[in-house]
Length: 177
Image 1: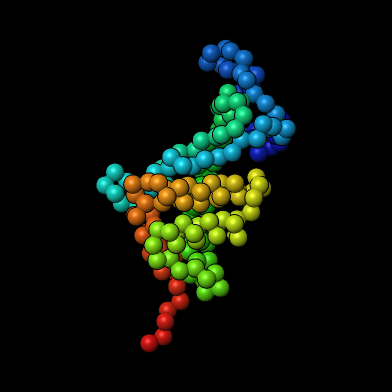
Image 2 (image 1 turned 90 degrees about the horizontal axis):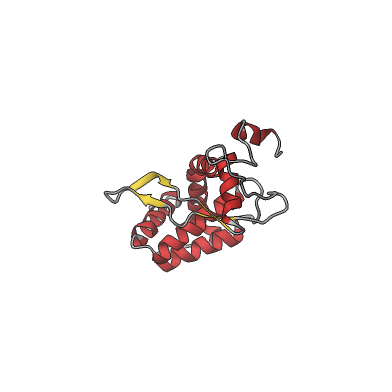
């Protein structure tokens, strides 16, 4: 089942029966579907005092298919915890790559307002990010979708956009006097 990488997470957990309730679990074959997608839209980027968190407080939601199927895989294989670990490890690298890409003159990106930040995230997602479940691409894509949606609809949209503009400015080449 799933090879060696899942063995450490599964351990002795019974996929068929829940040890707490002794009820048969509902599950599916993850290789034949249904396909679930990941949403990070409820993620919190800010501390209670309004300062930017070093790492976001991830809100990982699995969409698609039957909820009980996803709940079984999460309970058995610790999917959300594993995704959170990956997000924590990769987040700063992904954000820095976005900043360097935007700051590169070849991108043609100039972040001046919320609309331009949203457009840059969309362009980055369409140009740079690969689709599919390979590696961590689906989590990277979900991260930038979350950032875009927070800028589009969140009360903190100005702070998120300003943070990304500041980040990109830090990667801009110095102009000779």
